[in-house]
Amino acid sequence: MKKILLLGSGELGKELTISLKRIGCNVIACDAYENAPAMQVSDKNEVFNMLDKEKLSEVINKHKPDFIVPEVEAIETNVLIDAEQNGYNVIPSAKAVNLTMNRDRIRDRAKHLGLKTANFAYAESEEELILEANKIGTKVAVKPVMSSSGKGQSYANSADELKVSWKFALEGMRGNRKRVIVEEFIDFDYEITLLTILEKSGKVTFCNPIGHFQQRGDYQYSWQPADCLHDVIKKAQEAARKMVLDLGGSGIFGVEFFIDKKGEVIFSELSPRPHDTGMVTMFTQNFSQFDIHARVLLGMPLPEIKLNQSGASHVILAEENASGDYIIEGLGEALEDKNVDYRIFGKPFLKSYRRMGVVLAPSLEQAKLAAKKIFVKAV
Ligand SMILES: Nc1ncnc2c1ncn2[C@@H]1O[C@H](COP(=O)(O)OP(=O)(O)OP(=O)(O)O)[C@@H](O)[C@H]1O
Ligand SMILES: [Mg+2]
Image (tube, rainbow, N blue to C red; front, side, top):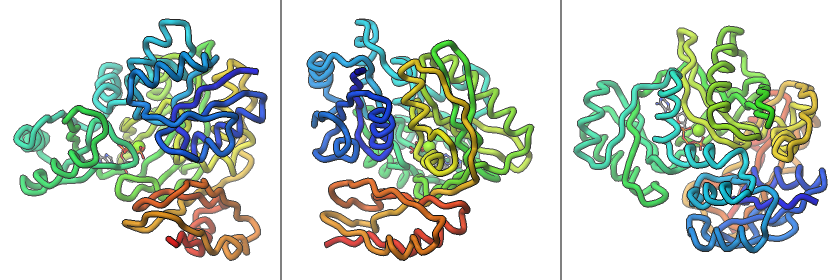
């Protein structure tokens, strides 16, 4: 039985663990808090701060896994580079995990490979942020170089707004680098995630593009297939292929693009693992993004990926400023539409706007209607 050390035990890790368990793996789920979603379905777990270098090395040496599989960005990735050099398999590769942990590294890489991106610069102080934003000369997006799910992210149009953005970014920042990326605001027509599969042999395969809608920098709903022109899909595939081949290894990647009104495909960011917007594949595809990641990381042959039906996912969120214990009501009502399905993640407590589950349905309209019937209530 292959032993998997899963670094990060949220909802994506939970579904990946289920896929791995189904094909005979032993999973040790890690995260900073007890009873995290993936820990509820794994063989063993470890609770520790994955940004702690010594602790992370200790856990790797204790379990000696066949595969180290990161599920979040907040990991001391230098430890993974050392582990790979010492013969461990890091998924998809230590390089991919290291470059994507910080927005600046992966963005620089995309630029180096000639991908089209929004104009961007970096800033390490409020003054520098104002200076760089003025050079860009449009409304800008400001994001900490290390954060996820929209944390610390805002838009600004003036010096006063930039000052607020700088403060907000500092509060939402993970890790210890006071650095933000400031980028041209793209007034896109729509945005997509292109799930891109890289096999060890270097073969690259794509799932149907996923359209998604974000609020507060966080995903609200997604649908597959996104209605893209053939030319848009081709351009996105070409860019995604370049990126994953450069990063190397094996696994599934979520590659995010903005599509503007002229049909230009603009690279936004990439995650070297299943993507939150890709939860819709649990409903639409014969093999979900989790099943695919599980097989490909083990070096197994990739099955034929088919879109069984169109579908949509819609998040079930906690309210703003929620905390503590909770109950979820209205699930039965949501299932009155006989084509609706859902997943509850089992997170042990609420946080402001925390993602607690997802509704799956054949159309966006049905997903939205069902999600409206579901309430997460603090008790
Ligand atoms: N330059 C931009 N122009 C317009 N919208 C943007 C820009 N940058 C980000 N956004 C919006 O914010 C969303 C989140 O941004 P991004 O993917 O960079 O952040 P994130 O925190 O990594 O999110 P996640 O981890 O959930 O993918 C984007 O999907 C997009 O909707
Ligand atoms: Mg994103």
